[in-house]
Length: 193
Image (cartoon, rainbow, N blue to C red; front, side):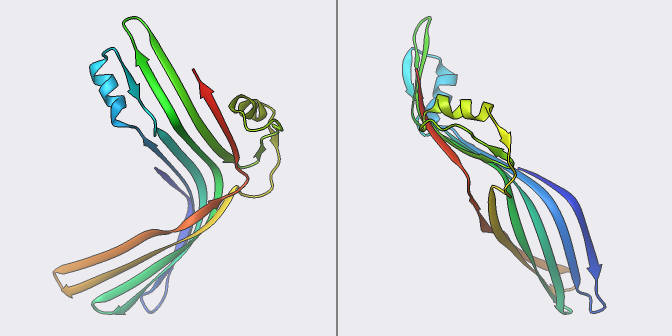
């Protein structure tokens, strides 16, 4: 993942507590590959390999955060951050059927999958069903149409630091507890042979 803080500042209060504000851009991608893909790469033997279940998720969002930490006593400090999330882009691609056939001098690939996506400020103008070819033709006719973020969400972080002795410190944190809901997605299914 990528986490770039665009701006941030903090305030120290008289009672040894802190308040912070930040704006960040975050991006994360996850790819899931089946074991058979690695068998194919390792062996390169004549066979048909089932690569179904391959999928990729990628998303990007803006994070507006406010945090506060407070010293409870000499041994304990607690804190929390609250995040408001604004979605910039989201792509989810999954293959329901995906076969790679390897013969002596020939490769064949059969695939069937689904793409769901949404992008800030871009509108897919395709009006033809949910065919994968029409889906991508729709993106080539893009128009800028800013109607707000493509998704909204909230998250929270919680933490504590405890010093049972002067030479020992124990810390606990639970980060990114929240959700972002994507809207305005376009979906298409298709087959490649």
